[in-house]
Amino acid sequence: MAVQKPSVPKGTRDFTPVEMVKRNFIFDTIKEVFTRFGYLPIETPSMENLSILLGKYGEEGDKLLFKILNSGDYLSKVKIDLAEAESGKLASEISEKGLRYDLTVPFARFVVQHLNEITFPFKRYQIQPVWRADRPQKGRYREFYQCDVDIIGSNSMLNEVELIQIIAQVFQKLMVNAIIKINNRKVLLGIAEIIGEPEKFIDITVAIDKLDKIGIGKVNEELLSKGISATAIEKLKPIFDLSGTNKNKLESLRNILKDSEIGLKGVEEVEAILNYFETLSLNTELELDLTLARGLNYYTGAIFEVQSKDVAIGSLCGGGRYDDLTGIFGLKDVSGVGISFGADRIYDVMEQLDVFPKEIVASTRVMFVNFGEKEEKYCLPLLQKLRENGINSEIYPESVKMKKQMTYANNKNIPFVILVGENEMEKGVLNVKNMQSGDQSEMKFEELLQKLS
RNA sequence: GUGGUUGUAGCUCAGUCGGUUAGAGCGCUGGAUUGUGGUUCCAGAGGUCGUGGGUUCGACCCCCAUCAUCCACCCCA
Image 1 (cartoon, rainbow, N blue to C red):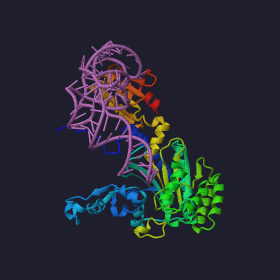
Image 2 (image 1 turned 30 degrees about the horizontal axis):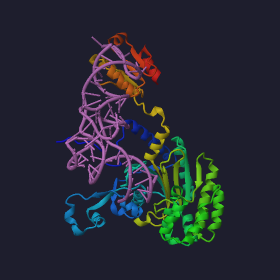
Image 3 (image 1 turned 90 degrees about the vertical axis):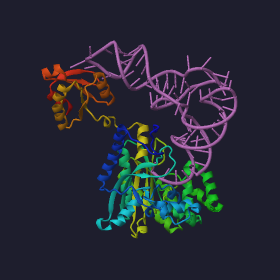
Image 4 (image 1 turned 60 degrees about the vertical axis):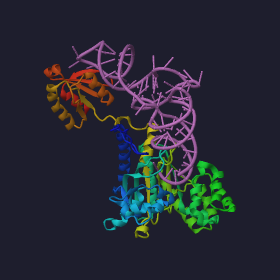
């Protein structure tokens, strides 16, 4: 048989030990912050029934779902004519499960399904991979980890503020300079009302979301092509020209939206968040950005997005308030708000900025050189003692050439190598080599212990 | 789904106008140095030039197809 060229599917990756140590550093940091604010972990299955997933992410989102082929003789049960079948129809006949697309929808399902075991407001976090059948590119993978925190069953703006605090703390701990952008879907809805195109709300938000990327000209083109009138577009212009401080923008907005009830409600919400925020004096920037829209249609109130100030890679974190995500599963009038950190993009940013702490990678602190069977037996109890004292240590498993053993220690970044051969065993000492300085000295085991702890 | 980029040694990449035996650096193996890595010196191994077809006396190089890759759009973390 021909040798197969090994490979992983498009958009997926292996992680080496060094990469995993760094990834775990991110996960651990995020978990620690989540826990500090009183959130507890849950997990849900990798796959969900397609009925749960479909229709929650818009038309585009549905296309990006990975579907799982039914088991067994799935074709025998198909009721439609294969020759004339259209892919979409056929898919629903031969596939009833899909890989989760995000963690928010499975969470909504979880809440409704476990109502009896949950006390509201319910605070949970969830760190698991999600899958999207997107074309991979920079900062975009087909399998990636999201770190979600959500609080459901509370309308208070205090929750939004708490999420902002979490964002600030996470990125501070990870040494990433971040800017938090906020907006509110009610404000956007109000704007759509004021310009006289409330039914085109989704098209408008999708178009203006691209403002900073493609410029006002192209956005206007797109709006026109979606059937929005020229006079409406003209009315839109001054709104996105708003500048100055968040307070200034809010004032102008209040004036513009004075005839829209829902718009004013949005302004109020934003203002409440900003007022709380001011009392906190966090050193992370918070900017009211009216062009922030977010495509996910289940958001109804505040929306967030976090970007790196130093690396262009799309958003590192995003989220918002959803008033009725559980409604579709039969639980009405329960509002939630949550955000999701993109661990893989955060990794890419941290890698590029070179801000991973150096010490997290060196796992083994002491290695014994292997000189042979007699020496092995002499070293094993010493290793045992080191480990009991919390010192990561190992012995090279084979008595091969010293050069090879030293190279191993060097490549693994092990700071101390211990040589115990005939001479040392006779004298009852250890020959300890500091791999960084190259210095070498004989010492008793107790001295070594002292030196390392 | 749309448009483009790049596929040559384990890795990163050179390769002239289409011409005889396809190169470099890093890494790997051995030696200088039988108990000393990271520096230095010497030697060696390692190739279906992504795959399939075509043009040509002759193809890594030109043409077609295909697969993979990265990037941009769409959308998103």
